[in-house]
Length: 272
Image 1 (tube, rainbow, N blue to C red):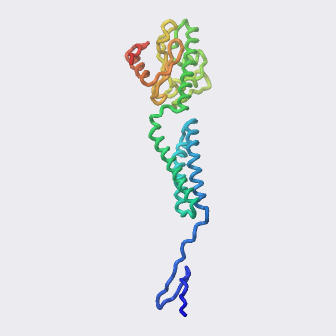
Image 2 (image 1 turned 135 degrees about the horizontal axis):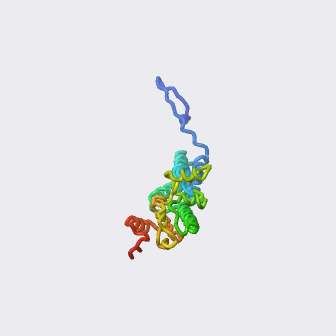
């Protein structure tokens, strides 16, 4: 009776003449469930990324926030790729890997789409708040100008620093929060006034030094801020009667052209 020899066992070594026959052991399977764990992490990072991005967009973007928003989708993709490389053992694990890849690519797509749309998306909520703060600053300056005029026979102050000396106005009011300008500090009023004359200590342009309470009408401009204060989106303008208006970039450029031509108050803008 012939008996067939059983197949060689993996890792068994046999001698055949001068040759050594070896059978390499296959790579042992990865521990069950490990690819699923990577998939869980990939999905969690991708799913939590969107609300985190929305929250950071509401509070403002700094360097750390930008780094987090950019890296998170790719971290998610890395987890998904690692899960795929572990050769998922069953159908459920393969489904989790597929879901992880889907969420990862969706988050990367949102990131790239946002990067393309961001330059045209308008001012952020923080910038909007800064615009309102600037308007409040100019309104306080307008009130101080009118109080100064009341004490000086209706004449407006020749320069802003007279509001610091006569009206004891804080130099912080002269700073736009969207700029890198800093308020002036000093032990005495004279030191503060001397520092106030330096560049970067006032964010607003004053042109009302020759006005008085009679000539300073609601249409005449007393002060305004440069367009660069708010990234070219517009600017706040203080008028002679103390009220403040926000002008969009088109209206602001028209007003600046009128002032450059020596017209104050500016002519009404032509109808569209």
